[in-house]
Amino acid sequence: MMCSCSGVYEYFGEGGLQSDINELFGETLFEEEVSYKEPSKIEVSDYYTTPYDSSVERDLSESEVELYNLMCYYIERYDLSFHFDDVNEDEVINAYMAVMDDHPEYFWMNKGYRYTKTTLGTHTEIDFVPTSQEDVGEIVAKDAKFKTLVKGIAEEAAKLENIYDKVLYVHDFIVDNTTYDHEAAESNDKDDGYDKYFDSRNAYGCLINGKAVCSGYASAFQCIMKELEIPCGYITGQAVDGGEAHAWNYVKLGDYNYQIDVTWDDSSYTSDEGEKSERKSYDYFLITTEEAEITHIIDKDQNIPICSGLEYNYYIYNNLYFPEYDFDYVAYVIRDNVPYGSVTIKFGSHEECQAAYEDLIENDRIFRIDGVNGSISYIQGNNGLTLTFTF
Image (cartoon, rainbow, N blue to C red):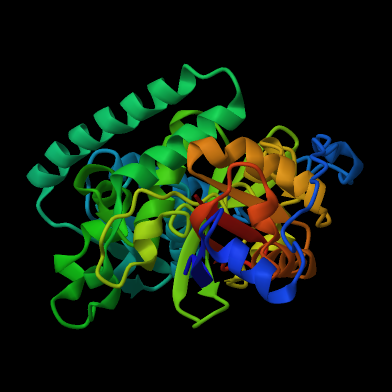
């Protein structure tokens, strides 16, 4: 998912490829004086419109709110079945779905359920049984371990003063400690896949077992954000490329909302062998709705806010973003990051990213930049906006 094209270029320096080409054409092709220009910090305030001034609200009736609160009361006491008198089954289902969306910490339950309805005259009774792990003793033990870890991660993140750094810490913790569970993603729920891979689909599997699919990554991120009291929600949808079901998050920082896809920022997601790479991506770290829609399709009938935040986007925040391609500005950033072994830069459009690729790679101008020699590899991000160079 992370790479749409990649390659390796070699430059041999004096006496090698450079000398041969110069002799062949009878002129010095590689002499170019680079004017390194330090890019100015993007003033994101210029891009903002009206702030989104309310958190996501559930469209629940008064009766559904009462059911919602009652369900939470029972679940937190590890009750695995609910009994209701004189209620409408649609209200019960709506309330339960809202609880599942808002409370990923109830990892032993999911959106599956069954219920029986009994009607005697005007009196109605509903016995509602959510799909869950059935061993209450095991659930209690796992929940204690889970809560301890979530609290510990949140406490470490809370030590950081800047809200950007807090979210980055949680993002990196999940990516560094989780491997995408390809077997769970490919399992058949109608056979033994559901029970076998139950944990990989929730926050427990992500944080405790270190293996998860996208729903596990997104649920884990949401749990820790809740512990940090940072507004965060869960999004379902599909990938534009391939159409497979997917889950990710939105988060509200200050006055603005952002989308974030921790799963697709984990390089292990892209490995067919399931091998873990040390490389992290930030292509989906705090992005706008417009940018997310390049690669994501959001399911309908979700109360997802418009995400227009720019300030905390990884590349804007770290001065690695270029609305337009300019060689001298890009050369400045690449030169300063050569000692670190790699750098990823982001552009304002597919066209600008392609212009950078053609100039730096196809025209070999990257080798005019101080410190860039020998072999380099490059990766073009799946969103078509980023280029990563490894030196």
